[in-house]
Picture 1 (cartoon, one colour):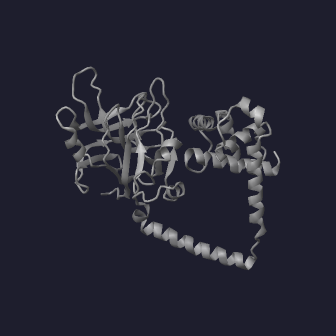
Picture 2 (tube, helix red, strand yellow):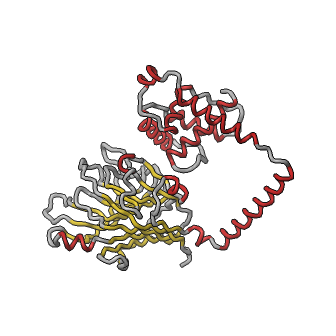
Picture 3 (cartoon, helix red, strand yellow):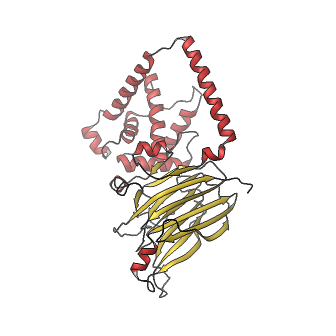
Length: 390
């Protein structure tokens, strides 16, 4: 590869990686991550880049050894560019017929080259550069001292979803995984507040389906002890495991351990005749080494047979979920009321060996072929870092 091609490929691959995973490339891809990356590219473009090739590319980009070379084909570079630039869906046959000149790769490389030329025009003198370095050093020192003395405040975060523009969400530390554009574009139907829909999907697989949660809103967690909560308005699940809630994850590919707390609808009783119910459900997944999750909580809120719809609707006007983590000790709480400031109740506590690195807000209905998706309006999110000694 030429020098400009190599630089463009490096920037392109890192950009594609961050688009897929929501964070910057820091280490060579694992086999699971490579397969996930390959599938995401195929789902978005209709074109294939092998998982093994993606793994090798990540190692090449992160390696400082000049002797270690990779030479991706123009077709591969074009596929990556199509993924980053969100080109129309196609396949290899159509591309060979209409776009065999690989326009997206050359467009990306040209745009990047123009950008680098513009940046190289400004050449600050040494005296100016010295003052810039001094100022930056002072600012960084002040920031680090503030982080040291006020780490709890700086890491805590509250979101009222006043604005749901992609740029605003990204600035607030959010990223969206498995975006379904049609339904994601309806996220701002009830501002202020985030509107998700109970789309088909789940974070653990079955014999037919791979794990996926559409429009999963995720942010990183950098603390061992914390509490997090969401508030919902008029979320009343009514069929087929419709649910919404909080998901704690060790990774974003669902291959690690996870904990899910949700308000859900249950109409399955293994053949027994029982009234359908709205429940607080807790699920603990051991990750890829375990084929099934463990239901760690199943707490009925309302049974549909004994309560009129008007009563249920009134008492589900405002609901909330909270998870408190202190090392391996987890405490799960909920609230459901016609009043917005109703107190939390403890649902259950559990000792769990999981070190979550990400928190997600979700709505789903499992792998059920019911297209009557209902909205879940999240009006508030909070993440508060706590002292592990308390």
